[in-house]
Each structure stands twice: as C-alpha cells, then as structure tokens.
Image: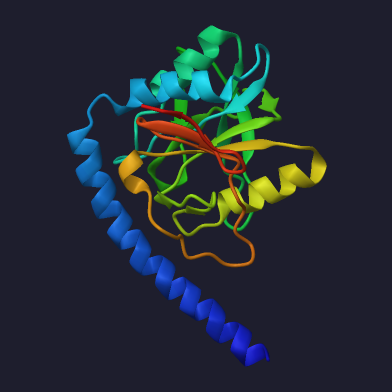
Length: 206
C-alpha cells in the first residue's frame, strides 16, 4: 500500500511538471496578446467579489510573466480595503502577510518576487487573491510547486472562514488540473474576461 501511494504521488508530480511547462508557454502568449489585462481584471474583481470597506485583502506582487496585479492593489486601496502582500518564512512553511499601501517600498524575496519590509505590520486576510499557472472550473489551481499557498490556505481556513480568488488570464484555463490530496480548492476565479464563483458558477461574463 505504501508503495502504491508513493507511486501515485510520483505520477501526480510528473503530471504537474508537464502541465506547468505547457501552462507557462500558454500564459506568455496570452499576456503578450492582452496588454490591458491587469486593469480589466481589477475592475472585474471589484464588481464580482465585492470586497468590503475595511476588509483585509491579500494580493501578490507579480513575478515576471504574471498578470499585472498593481491595478487591483490600487483599486482595493482606493475602495478602503487594507491590502496585504505575502511574505515568506522559509521553505516548507506557510506564508505570512504584511500590510501594503500605494507608495510603499518593497524588498527582494525568494523566487524573484518582492514583499513588504519586516517592520510593516502583520495582517490577517479574510480574502486572498491567489496566483496560479492554470485553473479549472472545479476551482483547482496549478501552482509553482512550492506548496506555499496550499499550506497557507489550509492553516488560515482552520482558524476562520476565508474566501480565496484565483487570479489569472482567461487563457490559463484547462479542462482539469492534476491535483493531489493537499491541494486547496479556490472559491472564485477572476480573469480579464470573466469572474465566477466555484459553487455558483458564472457570476459575470463579458
């Protein structure tokens, strides 16, 4: 039985590795073809998810090749939300979140991203915008392989209800994401073209 479980895990890892390679190429082509995706996604996020004034909302500073999240961060701040960005604690550990506002300087972090400086206040987001390489209509995401968001969502959801929103280009959708037992399901998907709740399906379509 242990051997079967290990083999199944290896199969999932291989499927995910192949899916990531294909997803990166698909995302790069879509990003080049959709230069206004960031502002369009920001407007759709606000209209569909309706974050509350004063709500703590985590976003993420985009890596090279990811959709521009700065318009969303700015829109949330202007709406009166407290924006937070993830900060790494180390390999194998969940993320923490620190407050951010427009004009704040960031410091280099692992994997080529940036995060708020250590002196910025910690935050406890109830709404999380989550990065991904691919997503499906069941609400599952293909991440980068580090497991950071799956660990983080599991920990946060164990403490209190949270809403998680996958942020992506529409072209990053796939029929089914290969997934394992520790992959956390998203509550919403928002792209530049549509927004839908996983349980209620489409909320808004252009």
